[in-house]
Image 1 (cartoon, each protein chain N blue to C red):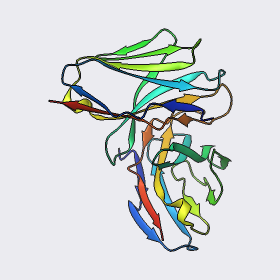
Image 2: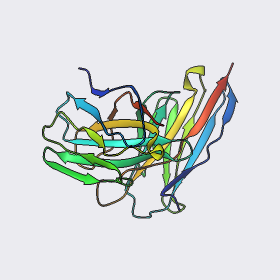
Image 3: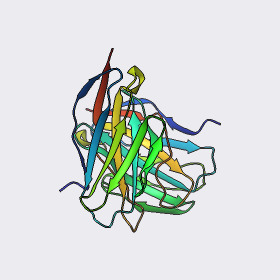
Length: 110
Length: 113
């Protein structure tokens, strides 16, 4: 079983729409979670951390649900520039391993 | 600042050849790591280092060696290239042990024939 799993999509949404992605993790001891954005043929870029209390950065909101072992990313008022692949990552409580999901592809349509 | 610099950006090798992927960062970050990214597999950790002289294996270390003689440099060596090592390789750095990868290099696209 993979440490982190994501729905690969693709998600095709119109401009202005709200879209949400979920990411499940298998290790209940995981402590730290993150969302990354990766444009086509580019390197991943850290988007935001995910805290138990939730984390909001402009149009982006990240949430953690420990009981169900998933994290989510909500994008409001989608822009064309939001089109990318979104990767989630989990860090177990011990050690230095990071586990990434395979990514969810988002295309925002004019 | 250049951030994380990887070379080369593209490389084609024949099976059995060896090569070194270079990675350098100018942010004085202690933590550096190498990932490979394959379709349907996501990013997988190959090796990492928490400081000069210290390296450790990640999730998929077989067929790769690393060394960390300086804080700035973290080269990845393919000992005897195999077609299964065809992938996109990313080097990353962060400013604390165990912290999330904060900066990635542009990547190296490697094909093994």
